[in-house]
Length: 617
Ligand code: ADP
Image (cartoon, rainbow, N blue to C red):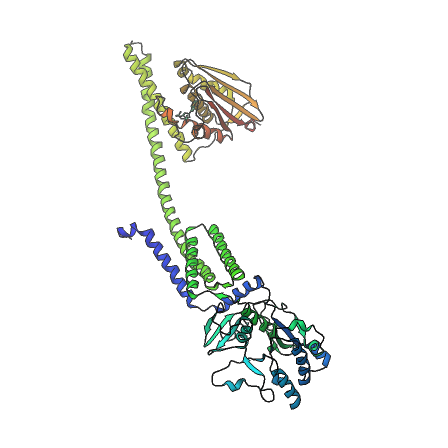
């Protein structure tokens, strides 16, 4: 498909815009889902690991517990309550709150009246009704006579039953309903000096009410006194001075006396009594968590979607996964730290969901892209292999076809030179140049042929038992003429050696290249020493010259295909850059290796190591 020019030019930018649009689209869709359950779950986890703040110390709990029932053998009657309240009144509390309805207390009319009248003598005595005070139906909150002197205020527990997380956990305190304060706001106001609710941090509106989230402490944080101790006056009255005393039940008879909390979803994980203490303390200490706004949630979700998208599209899979996990852990850690240290509840459900959705959404996209790319690579590679094959065939054909006419030229030059008919000096010189040049060309063609054999991998070792010293001597003999032209003396120090199973042609070529190089790169009138020895399970051949040497920068490259050092390239010394490459390759085919040591203007030593196990068995 032909793409318009502007598209090709701006393709990466266009793709980026499309991807960002996708990430934003996913953000938008995810944020449409109310994930209260998931959000509250992540919140509860944070609460469980958060730093617990010490209570205000203004709330005291008295519970009608199993010890009380055991002591009096039944539920406390009106007379028992009167007895307990008489003791409490002397202790001088700021407020007393009955968490259960005093109308459940049994007794004769007179006994109940005595109880009701005594309760009314307290400066602040309330019954915390579990219903909300609806405007115009105030009578609903009145207790029946003779208890009607007891003040009733709405102080409901707020289970997330049909709203919010719907998991039955209590997480909120209602501060006011339809403009009237609840019991909690009222009693907390006795300590904060203000009955209004707008100054509490984290206040939010919900269906005509003002609410805050609870700053929880785990169950057992508040010490609880048994009701029987209050009745029998076996307590330290100083502990109730100016405190708010909550009286409730903990007899394991009624689930209403218990709540599920972020610490545990077990419906009896905390007494309602202690939950009310948490509610009051949240307000007295003004420590309600602040839930961040919907906009921040949207922003974080978008940001995390884009990070996920970037990671999935651009990084390698394992790297990407690690980075995503790290991002997730960092996000969790920051959210946790914010709640624990600053009481800020950052929404986590949408951003976390965004990571998963973006990851699973873009992984297939990436797979498709990679598949397409590898298909393109495959096609390109196939084309390149074909071109490479064509090139090798061409080189081989050319080299073969050139070799025969070249050999003919060389032969003819020799014939002319050895002919009895004398030539003039300049003619002799010209014919010699023809012969030398065609020899050089033939060497070059030889190297190219070897290279194409290597590249087409059609070299098979023809192993035959040979004496390396003999092979070297032949090479020296062949090159004697070239050395003599520069008046270079080739010295040999051959130790007697066992025969080795080698491919004579290949190793001859390798040694030829090394010795030819030492002649080429040595000045006139210098010496070359060729030595052999057996040492440490190796047969060692050394070619040492007194030539120009090789710079330390060049040494790592000289065995590379077509590499020629810079100064050599700019000199008159001819070469293809293939000699050492071929020598190394041929030696390595025999499981050997070549090493080089060199000093500028002092000379170079090439050492060939051939393994001893090439020896004939
Ligand atoms: P070339 O055809 O250039 O000689 P080689 O592969 O044989 O190619 O050698 C690669 C390079 O290594 C040469 O260009 C030269 O710079 C350096 N070199 C090889 N042998 C010697 C030597 N004996 N003395 C100095 N330099 C050498």
